[in-house]
Image (cartoon, rainbow over all chains, first blue to last red; front, top):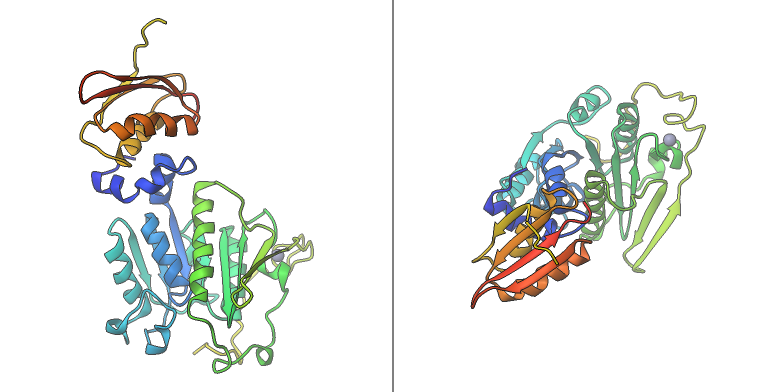
Length: 267
Length: 81
Ligand SMILES: [Zn+2]
């Protein structure tokens, strides 16, 4: 890849890293990453991947920006309230780095469209805020054999894990089924410290860049848990479940499932 | 020691850190292991920092020479990708 003078300046702190160099920066420039959700996690993940020069970012979200989002969703602002989140975030990302192509996918993800939505991308990031979507994205990535960087946040705690097809666990190896709707905190109960998605999204973006570069150790077979109140990071081993219903030896889930009944946030 | 004939030469006069090293690193990346890069520069700090960084990256510094009042010439042999 031939860099313009502007690109040499922009990416110089990457190029001088032995693990990146010009070749690594060229890999970043040709990568295509799909981000599910342009909310708390999707904003920082997309923002940092844009700064890093990821060639194509597909942003999937069907919501519009609300005032209550601005406490944590850093790609939106008071002037984009009411605007589709994908458009608001795309404007922010394009202002940061015009090298990046931001594809706005204003759709609610479902079992009928997800495989088509992710098929042109190398890596999928889950920044969704609900269990039905998290399981749907997991199952779709297992079936489509796409690496998935999954993140979740609640109150003061966040989790990150990286799922590489054929190399370790998937989300269902960890928790076979979504929790029943009654056990999931309702919207009113589910507070979150505004900076928490910045920490977790930053970790997700880091995993994406390592996947692209093929460098370092991924959170494969591991769940990283961050507790913001205690300031602790804890890694929990997640073995692959040979009886996993989607990635196990005899999978029972061979078609995608939409869990829709009774979950908060699905409207 | 016999004279080394460089396989590639770059002139980075007028550039300052970190672009001096960015240009030098991209040039080394584009070469084969065993080949020698000649760098002409006029930024004094880079005459020390480029050889150090190249060695940190596993390359071999063959020569650092002040050739006149303003310029230095470095010879770097690529040892690894
Ligand atoms: Zn599994």
